[in-house]
Length: 425
Image 1 (cartoon, rainbow, N blue to C red):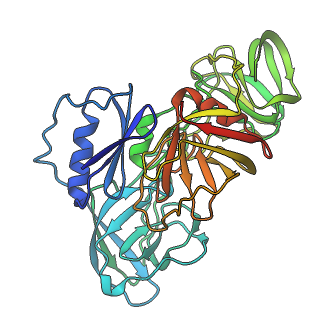
Image 2 (image 1 turned 90 degrees about the vertical axis):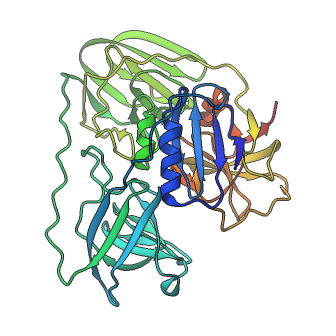
């Protein structure tokens, strides 16, 4: 077993060749320890997010000896060559509720496709000796063998994912699929209307606090790029125009500027910074299921409702082009590099082009492991990707450095064409 720091608030524990059942047992025990915020199960690792900088070594041990996995019998209509097989969920990743299932017969293995294409929800597919069900409509590169009508993911269900790590999945070939169950209805906003969106601005979203319980279901904890408390509007380049039903106090954070005033209409126009935040007195409802993949995006004519916690934040005046990192958790690590920011920027991640040869050949077959907001991946094409708040919870690329928790706000302000230096203090 190897334990390596993954930034200043997480650790990557490599367990070697362990079974899916053992992975699950160790994750359950780790989550019971005091100071552990989250434990993300990878292919053969645990990515442990902690409250401080030390990995908890003592805590309340849980009795997992009597733990029994849940068994699911899932009907599959195969396109050809049906096969009945029993698989086990090793970990979740890629997209919400996607379970990597091991146990597919080696003689029936097929390599992953060279490129992705649209894949329908419910598709059953394989890549190598791993199998999986696509729980939502998404691009994917696995080989489609059939489909099921079982609801694998419902963001309004508790829990939202049918298959959890450690579960047993019995694939049953059928000649006809049973009718699909409808998704549960989304909850309605509980508060009063407080404003109308006259113009949505550019990529404005309603973001609430980070919810670390989501990682157990294959979802990132979300939240704002910055360490804000409460629920607020995260704006990109152009702010929304809002009309309030009554005079309301609004606070906005735009780079090093913080302003607060009572308004009936708010129109900030072009922002001073790449991203800015708007907080509304009394808070605003997130208007999304707890397990939605993305934060709610504003559209013209949308009504905003009261709810959630009132936002609190701070301005920043530090140099955002120098970002402190901790090398690793993977070797070879990077302690300093200068990059150019590419146009590929969103809440999932920021792609960067190193300005020098890193001298590292990124492996193409790395076993997937957990990630967090601030993880920096090295891709085989030589680019670096800094993970944002809506990152995939697991990934199979090298992680040569991790942005320190106090520096992650700087990622929000990076604009295409800018140069940024990552360094180990």
